[in-house]
Image (cartoon, rainbow, N blue to C red; front, side, top):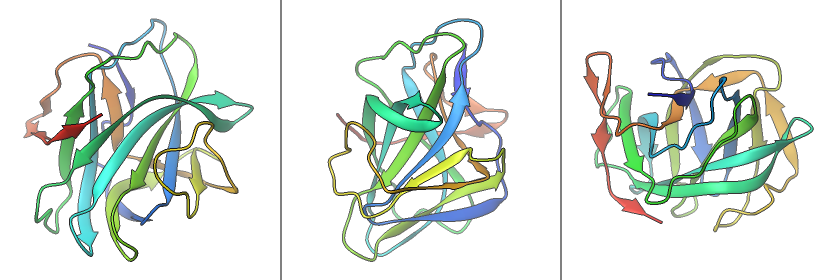
Amino acid sequence: MSYLGDRAEEGLTTNINHQQKMAWKFTTGLTAISPTFAAVQVKSTVGGAPNLTLAIYTDNAGAPNALVANSTLTLPTPVGSAHKWVGVRFTTSPTLTANTTYWLCLQVEGAPGDRIGIATAAGAVNQQCNSLADPLPLSDPYGGPLTYGNFTASVFVEDDAGGVIGSRMIESVDIRI
């Protein structure tokens, strides 16, 4: 099994607001990966039970660029106050090239005022990229204006069916492609 992203259960919480895109930069390993499963660690929601779109973008000079794949998580209600892994399967697996940088992106769908808290931690310089007030559907290319941060997030894609991280079960949720 191969994966791209951060499978750690990070302790901080970062909010993603309605129509905001937030992406994190990761580099694939020595072999190509064709992810079939994606997961994110969610802590809370404000407003309704918004959907969360997870996407993979290519990298261009340190910024997210072309859309590779995306899928939508319908979050369970209620999410609760503790971080909780939620996952979704891709119906068509993209092929991610070995030794290549990609961006894992999250965008909140829902009504104005909706937001989702996700698990984060301190990360590398410019590892996080934000694009504010970006209407759905996801733009291709990524779009701007861009701001950067030094955080990583508990979000990953993998080439296995997924289901367990350590002793914690990932809750599979509805998928819309």
